[in-house]
Image (cartoon, rainbow over all chains, first blue to last red; front, side):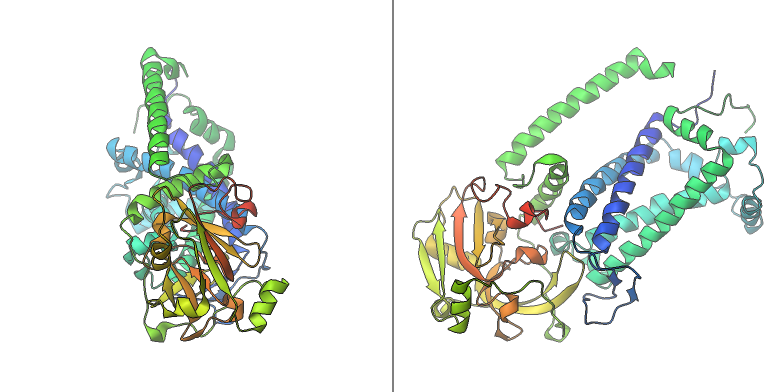
Length: 225
Length: 253
């Protein structure tokens, strides 16, 4: 019998998050284009100094549906993410699969993994079944740092939410700072997405995507760990 | 694949689906009972809107206050979108310095009244320095001065079945807010900005200020206020001109 790579919960939440992330990205760009300038502090507008002028045109026509889609997608993403997060704690998913062993947390080993990837060395068969240390650190950062920061900086832009929890925005130094952080964390997540997909293509797109859809794809796992 | 369709999995899935459906039904009933459904709840996007509105309202029910700032934090630049209404009625009032302007307050009230600018200015006033964000992304901090909407609503006597307050300006950008925001201490009819008269492009003579929502909810160039228990028969029934143009009715974000 074939061995299973991903649990049904990981697979379902993965695809909900993937789809809603796409919705968030597209609508986020639509919203950003209404004012592609970034500021630091509480306020910022045309006529005040910016932190960053993005080389993009001002397009006002798309922020309406953009905002509707952004919040619909955000709800799907946050709810699926929450289920994944809680289940991951309960089932020890994070501890077993994401937490590097003490021996792996070693610069030599980490740079070794990176150099193997940069030289496009074919991956070991065992790497289908478990994450290497660079993957583990990346997934830890995405799940425990980047997504929480996205949600936090998003909530910090809400005048309703910050009226109840003002410190959500004051720790960032202001509403425009939160907006800027929201933008830069998006860039890190998009960078992650590109590398994620590039890695699938290099290591076998079909097998890996099949594993994330059906749970299987790697045949029977050899018994050695 | 075979383990996906075991009897155990089917029973669990069935129970989960039944629980989910029942929970949805109860949620819908409760949401309706406690006014947690926004007027633009329809369609696929309405699902996200309803979740946002219903999730935020219980937190805000105790009338949390928007952050207020110091005088030295007031922005030097306070941009504004749109031009003043071009219609004659408004232009004539503007030319006469709004001496003949009156704000009508009617609908589900015991005493429909109308107020002149001078009368509004004689009422107890409130000033606040708050952050105003445009849905486009820019923002500024400004001081607003005016009379709390709750004061005016108490004068006309809001009937208990009232659910929304609707604002009609001299242009067609009408909008509405729920009673929670209508009686919020930072919701007011503003006639002053940064210590001076409200500039024309900022909505003279009087604009609404809703401090816990995005800027577009703070309707400018006010002409009439109506209290109602339904938004179905106003415009397309979505609660605001903005919602008809694709901008969500609830701007708490």
